[in-house]
Length: 283
Image (cartoon, rainbow, N blue to C red):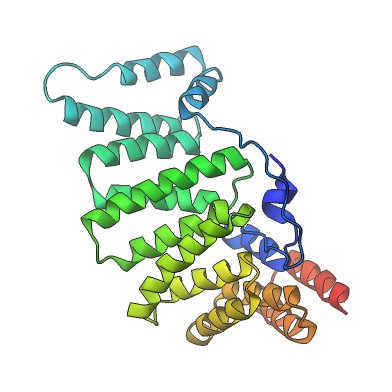
């Protein structure tokens, strides 16, 4: 799909920072931008993807994978399926280097053993991967998978706020970052439920800031990022997002101030170069 539309368009220095520290990030929506014309969404079929990935395997690896896939026999089928899915997941991670299939099979095992730890691990892996996904079809599929796993984990542990923050983040980093305003609001509502109970939850405050940034609610985003920075003065991600938010809302003085702070904290020549370019463009 279109990398510029999904990742880079309209973004400032936070993208550069997160390439170093977090992988990638989201693009803010312009308040004056015209909504793109609706188009038929491409579907991602995991089973077709598996067959395509198998075509790249050597004969010996394909034979080994076939043994794992056919290892379930009579007896305790449930336990065998958990073991088989875990082994297949590790195969795709270690031997074939496919993150999508590693997470897919790991989550299949987690659904069978109903382990909150394993469900959360799989969901968090997908959530991190969402931030750099360039294919809109894959983004949609991964978002749905992560939401399902977080919801299943929350059903097991309904008082776990980290799980609720993860669920809210899925909506924002998923379809929300490519123009899905309703998806962003679902995430924001989930996160608001957490901060109403505990205003000191900085993970939730940070994601509320990102939700505001993505949806063009810049004043609200500034408020959230400021809260995070007050509590965590060295939080580079919050500082970079705050600088970009000020730039997006047209406050050049504050944007330059926070870009300079991010430059000092990052202390990286490439990032410094990009910050200087950004500051120059604002002036």
